[in-house]
Amino acid sequence: MSLLFYRRPDYVAKLPGPMNSTQCQVYIDRTQKHRRAIPPELSFENILQNKALPPCTLQDFMDYLVYVSHDAENLQFWIWLQAYAKRFYALPPAEQALSPPWSVVDRIQPTGNDPNQQPRTAGKSKFVLSQYEITLDQQDPSNSPNALVSTQSDKPSYISGAAQPNRSAANSVEDANAQAGLEWQSFSIQPFRSEIDRVISHYIATQSPRELNLSHKTRTTVLHALHHTTHPSAFSLVHDIVEGTLRGQSHPNFIRWSICNGNKPKVLFLRNAGIVHVVCGIILATILILSNTSRWWRLFCFPLFLVGFSIIVATYKGLCLVIHTGHSRNLRPWEQFRDGAFFRSFETDDEAALSTDEVYSMSNRDNNSKSGTFMDTFGRGNSYDHEPWVERYEKQPLLQKIFPKNIWIQNDTIRILQDRIVWQSHLWSLLVSVPLTAAIVAIPQAGVL
Image 1 (spheres, rainbow, N blue to C red):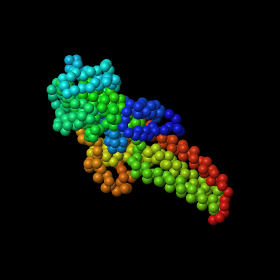
Image 2: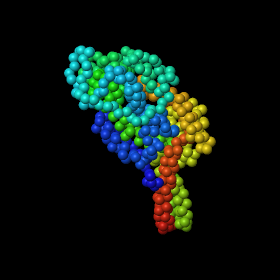
Image 3: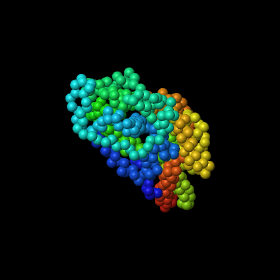
Image 4: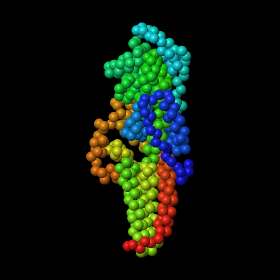
């Protein structure tokens, strides 16, 4: 990565309308552009394995999707599906046989009202599970307060706890099936059937709490597949679309956002300060040109230009040069009202005080203390308007929003990228300020003042 020409990952805008396989491929193609901008340490795999330190942990990724990009349902569904596939393939062969694999090329034959009619498949397909683990504390059923021992057809979920059917979920599934033209009941003896019904009511059905952005064709195809089987391959289409969106759009945007160390009020304030420096330099140069003083006094414009352009370039990339000296960042609005015990532990920039293992251990303890609502598969919707921090942040004085508390950046790779951007801003500022100052010095005196 060139020091002078390094660029953060480009912002990837959401494609209009529901997602389908074609649009998903567009996202995948775009990821090729971000390979040089995203180091391997911040790869999609490392983020999802929770191997990266703050501000790039899995919880940070979820916070970004909830509070910034507003599409956390993709990650929530993706995490559940990874865990569900592992649990399904861990079943005895006899139980797996109750839910045969589903091929996306299968054609749905006209069906009647016979609930005993066997599903007709034109072929078999293998559901490819991502080749890495999802490390979440909620995955251990022995430590999860929501994990319950259930019957053979309703195994406990490592992510969401037991799959307990309820009336609202059943009604939602019936409505979704009716819209898809499915008149008979699904096979209740298949493993995890009630959990699948809850997934449909939370993610697949229209107007569900965490409805995925699927086209009508994709939604209908998936509902037909899930009506016949609970095999993970029934989610193949949704899996490809969700993972493509996460990889090609959410992940690059998250890394781009994580590199920023200042909140929006802070960045806007500093950007205006940089503009003021440049304007003051121009005013000073104009006064000196119109006066009878020596032209060498115009060199005093150079510091104003250098500082001003450095601030403008850095803030354009979301960086505050002042707090960068301590490798810190502003607390996000939703972080400012959490328990400050952990944050106070990292207000120092003394990296030698803690080893990497100690930092990672403290980070995990902090994640455990956070509200894990958005990590729940079958939690409420992803709206955060009701959260207490929203009202408290809105009532904050403007000065507190511009100068919030800071926290030390634990991720070495993020600090390196920020250093690169800061040096880049200084170099670009130097390249602009030197010829500009030279041109000002070369202008003849007007002698008007």
